[in-house]
Image (tube, rainbow, N blue to C red):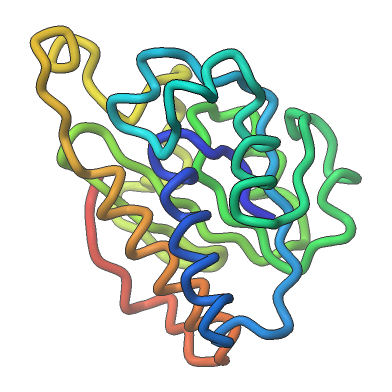
Length: 182
């Protein structure tokens, strides 16, 4: 399950379709989950088109890339029950807390501007980074977007995230080989 399909998750979905089409993820059944609608500002740094504005993000990408989707916010661990792995690309701590406390393996992709990180369940981090509580925020800095500057930390996080999803399915994931700091 991919939870959150904005600036990071929307590209992660496209990359996963690329690998699925090349038979690199044969046994994967993917569900996309996001309750949000596409806004005009999302077009600057997310994988959406003008015709998607006002539509649900998960539905748009589910139909475009032929994956299952849920128009929902994760508010209960029971929503995760049918999934072996959860990939987080969310902008809120509440969803992270639910997934972190679940018995599921998770990969958490984050970015802010040019900064990016990818974390895994069971990974040891410096300064207790995984427990960092932040308000809901975009992967872009609003003031930079306001002057037309788009940063690419979200694309880097999505690329590392899809690489680690591939490693997970191939049985070669090593949680101690993660790059990036947020």
